[in-house]
Length: 174
Image (tube, rainbow, N blue to C red; front, side, top):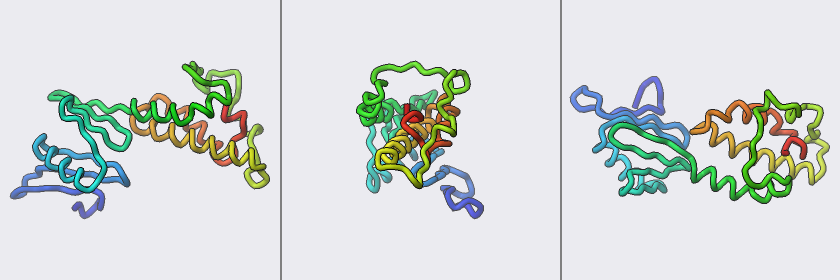
């Protein structure tokens, strides 16, 4: 274990660095040989829910799909995004937003969807408004998860949307 960072672990052999493991909450980064990585995955599977598909080299973990070959590593969240789409389908349908939606970048729209004058006072919110705030928090939180891992292109829009997490109205949810 590193003396400067308690989340960083090393494996050494006679002073030579063989492997590094960086752990943060429920995520990890492993650096080492393929053989040591396979051993590491075997040990992780004994303690945690982790599935792999050996025939195509994909690792499925915590909503991420990690595909590796001899020359590259590819990380996607297609399954997580589809799951989110399924979970939020009723909410999107309620607003008439089902199917594929093309939305302009928030900086280039005529509508100000993040207008602070359209917000709800969370202290005096009705049950319906509280439900809307909760739905907004779930939707934005799920999209933040995706933006952090693989969809950096939506990070700006999600960052703007997150400013209203505590007071979103139905108009903001739209």
